Amino acid sequence: MSGARPIEGMPSALPGVAYALGSFGLWGLFPLYFKAVSSVPAPEVLAHRVVWSVVFVGVLLLLVRQWGTVGAILADRRRRYRLIASSLLISANWLIFIWAVAHDRVLEASLGYFITPLVSVLLGRVVLGERLFRVQWLAVGLAAVGVTWMLVGVGVVPWVALGLAATFGSYGLVRKLADVPAIPGLFVETLIVGPPALAYLLWLGLEGAGEFGARGVGFDGLLIAAGLVTATPLILFAQATRRLRLASVGLFQYIVPTMQMLLAVFAFGEVFTPQHAITFGCIWIGLALYSASAFGGRERARGVVR
Image 1 (cartoon, helix red, strand yellow):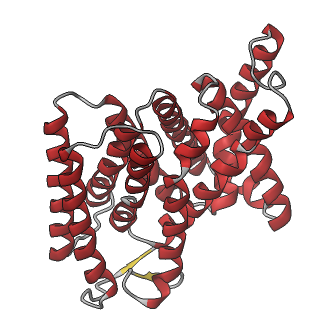
Image 2 (image 1 turned 90 degrees about the vertical axis):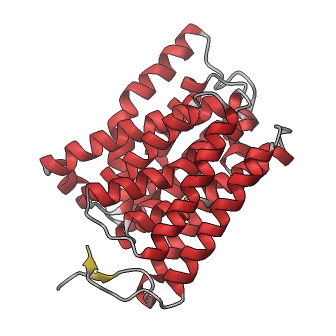
């Protein structure tokens, strides 16, 4: 079949694995950046993320000469609508995460990204009909046990965690269905929400309530860097979702909450409980089983993915 790619576990899937590792590794370090701007209200930080991402990705489009692809995406009604949905989902995810970091809820945010792969697996199975092998089901089951233990141990409904999981899991699905190149697709996503974000920042400036220009060039540069910080892992993520099954992308996402949980405990001083320890154990055992299956040659190609 023309344009088909073998499923993961084969050598040609290695670029997808590399994209996934790069994307989730960078996301795992996100709390460090957003702690640095945590004194700025979350909606304002979100607006800067959107506006400067439009600028940064627009420059990338010039460098790779893909402006024509943007026009083709905008002319395709189905893709355009799907990217409208994905832009709203990722904007909501960004806002929840920014608020969580600013309010010392990084551990709960990390729990959300522990849950996200389960959402991805569910969506991949129900919507896309993706298959899981027995060892993979065992890996997912262990992860589910760990997350369930965490939810029971906390004793409250973790709205931050559930919001992050729902928005990002759904974003991954919609982005895969849109089937657009990474850089043009991200540009269209940020362009869709760019005008209201820019209008909000201009309104804050006119009211004298905005932080940009009020704290010096260094802090302004930090806010501008939101474009680079935001766009780079999203581009890598989009490339990964085009090359790997959604279920496998979901399992790679455990890199993010692991790094964020470590930052929460060792960098930000949040309390690490026995519930966290049990959750970690279940999840990492599951990941070890999955990795042995995917990269040890135990899976056999039973089809192709687009």
